[in-house]
Image 1 (cartoon, helix red, strand yellow):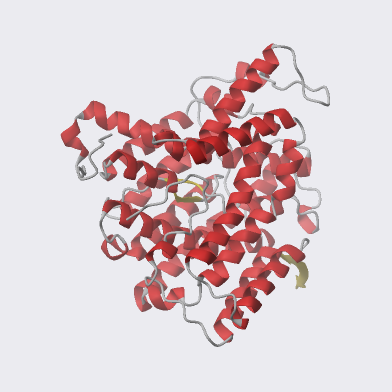
Image 2 (tube, one colour):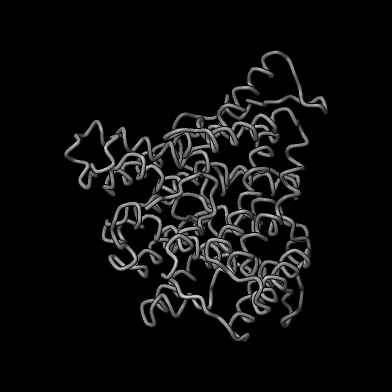
Length: 468
């Protein structure tokens, strides 16, 4: 909002109500494209696996509601000191895809909505793991904890998350390659050549511009290559303007929990990286005050709350950190305004249904960038933390994680009493990586020595690098 880099606004009330509201809309705009993309992608996983569309849980409206309420819960936990917005986490996409495709035991004949409920149960447990890490950090300190979760472990796990979803991107894009390529091209253009706010929201611009192109093609009578219509607006016409989100209470099963919960390792490291980045942006040590234990608890409560009501996991958003850098307004009140606006939007069914009409090809085009970028973030995490891959211990850890994460495509299924339990490839990779890092000599990672590396953990596409 202000071109003077030395002018920082800590109390946005001095700008007046109108400007505060405008700044709140700006934060809503920044998080919107990425946050709503998660339920759209997840809905596609379950429809492809079961042939059924999700009618409750993991919808756009629930996602917006959980993001807004989750952000307010986070601010309550952090003494209202941290200017962070919590949106949908990309880190759990691979877990949702795995649960959607579970086909043994009780999941064999299960429908999409019930499977989604069990996936959300895993999200709830993942959120609870934040409390465990927060308590350990409070007791022993962040540096000791991070020795067990260094970049040589977390980086390759993030790489596996992105690569495991690559096939889904190609499958969706192949329904209409023209639309997919338009979406991909727009994201690349805004990410590389965008300026100001537009550089921060490449996903949203890719979705909006490719959607407009699809509308034009549809109006001209064009169809997908298989002859199907590009759009179907029947659900939009029948939906109302005001209504409650279709909440769905989580269900719990050990197999689904073991699919989703280990991903919390990656998302918690993302949180720590984002706290480092926000601290650098606003010029305050938020890891010390209000404390990393409080921010982790806030994120965990938001994620557990979302999972309990049928929403995706929440995470602190790099896009909104970029807005802080751009606007120079660092007042958390503005973020809370954006959270309230997100909650309001969640009670407009027609708006959510309109978003849900997005063609699969556009989702595929966005996914081309998204899934590849998730893996690239993992690579960046390794590179910027200067992981020495000439060391045998590091090569062994990375190699085993890759083979476990990508090789165990169907996981490992075993019996405990009468229950059939499946450990996914990602869970096996996480366990193997953590154990090898703890056992093998030569672990020299210390959190806080390399500030640039510590900030490079966020699983998002926007280009929000901080130069401080």
